[in-house]
Length: 263
Image 1 (cartoon, rainbow, N blue to C red):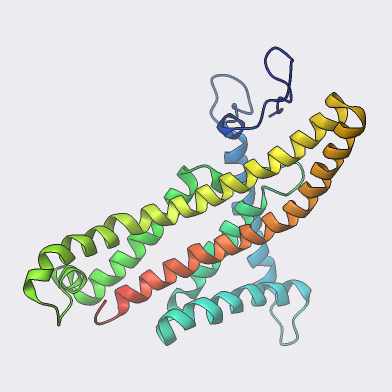
Image 2: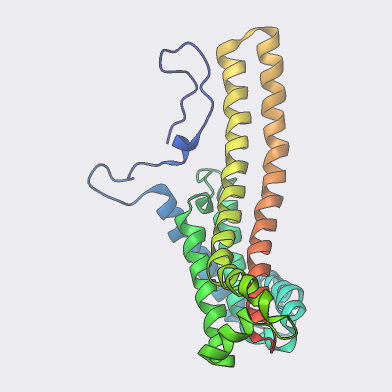
């Protein structure tokens, strides 16, 4: 997609907005395959290929690729799964590692040349991932405690006056069944949306000031804006990895809560 630097009448700068997140079909009208879909396909293939190659010829003294794969897995296993669930977390470490690698790849697509769009800024993608996590932690809870036991432990924790249950039970139900997947999706989407929008503003604003506004002030301010976009790109990369970590950490906490005898 080409971004418009000028207003419709050519009189000035038009700041980027939600419209810059809408992509037409890559193969023309009547088709449906868009750039975000392409990024999802590429990210899926990249993650699958990375872990396949990293584990294909595992040796005692790992090479660079095996070391990198083991480092990613070890980070999620030790820093998330075991920390939140104890030894029970080992069973879910492969899923959490895959989820982390996939979200990181989709997020970082926003600063990768040529792609330059975080696919997770489209609500459907984080929502779908949140639904998968929602199904997993609720299924685990029901399997461990039984259908009635799971919802009883969720809505009626022991040691609380019965009258309080009138308020607490619906809050706990809404929190676990509705709010958790919604907040997982919204948090990731809005962070990626806002970060990409700010980057667009700095880059396109700087380009407009340098090449369209001109003059000492325009070139000076535009140069500062373009230089600032470089700094923001590195900061955005950090945020993109952090948001993937937060999404996976919360998923692990929800699974751990479903496994607990009282939650």
